[in-house]
Length: 459
Ligand code: GDP
Ligand code: ZN
Image 1 (cartoon, rainbow, N blue to C red):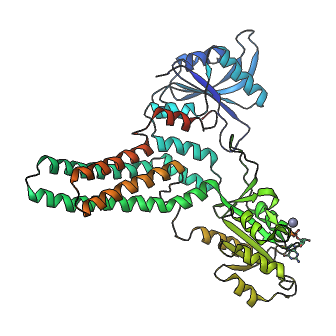
Image 2 (image 1 turned 45 degrees about the vertical axis):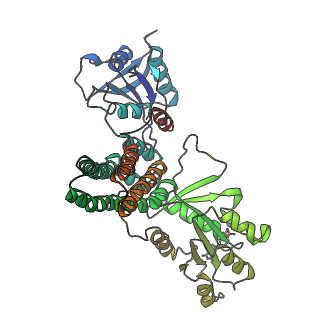
Image 3 (image 1 turned 60 degrees about the horizontal axis):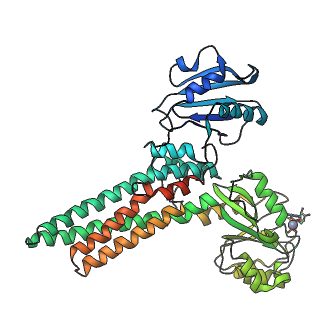
């Protein structure tokens, strides 16, 4: 295994004024010591201690930066290797100079995700936990962060391990059956037991898959478009949501698309306000491009906020908008309730059908709570609490769970139709292996490289 010493700038979450440079590997402490001037030599201090000092340029003795250095000796570290963390509070320039100085000593710049990859390869974390590190970096809301933390703590791994254990026990029974085919009662028992265990595994996988949709939203945000006629208050709504809920804008390297996105956090539900070709806020989309095309354009949205004017009668354009969004997730918002009523609320409710209708005045800041409630309850329909649930939010995991479910179902069908048990064994083994790919127990090197290269630098 590659055990050279690596380093990178590892900016903490929330991006404070402090930057951390992390060095990991056999020579981490020794190399850091060369450029560190403090009360003690870093090579002589206890593990898990922090030291104040200066980073100097070894070629001329000049001070580059005042720092706090943490010395963490393996294996009680993230990578299980020796780790040095240098906390710099100067600007980006001096941080980069410190890093360059370290690299000049023959330390290699870490590849994206390499620290986490080492943690995985050294058995510190399993694959789903490594992926959770990446989710954490990308987390848009507290809830999303809880999910990632839960996963990092191994919630998903534990569940998956439990299911694999159940499959393994089942396979053991199948084995007995194959070895002693002459005992009828063994076969009888095997049949019942197989159905029971396989059924259990299938049900548990199904439960996990139900959380996948919510997990995806927590991770990626609910793609949202605000529609309505001119002047009904779309921009005001956007501003109000963004102000009250502190838009979190993260830039994830390599994922920036042409679409401009803005995140707002409503009761823990991240809304990703889409601006595909300027339709985040659409007034004349129907008029301009027609009902069919606008339906196409809006198709990407998972939530539509349809805004109407309380102080104005419904128009043909309003009705067209209802028509366009009728099969989508819609919340109807009748804004400007501070004005004299001109709108026919009976008609609005009739047009809205099943969709919730809320009345607001953005001007007087009324009804915004109700709107946020409507958004939150739309999302948390199943009543799953993000704190306790084991969410599956990772596309790779969802794919593997689906495959495993199919394999188990094939096994169940096989048992029921009485095919030879060794055929059932094949399906169950496949399910067992597929689940193992989630935790990385059965996984290929190329997949690892691909996965870890998606990480941000310095993690
Ligand atoms: P948009 O064209 O749909 O984006 O509408 P705007 O958000 O630009 O709002 C149009 C006008 O309506 C602005 O002058 C807003 O200040 C005003 N407005 C927004 N919300 C309300 C409201 O609840 N009551 C009243 N009276 N005016 C509002
Ligand atoms: Zn506007």
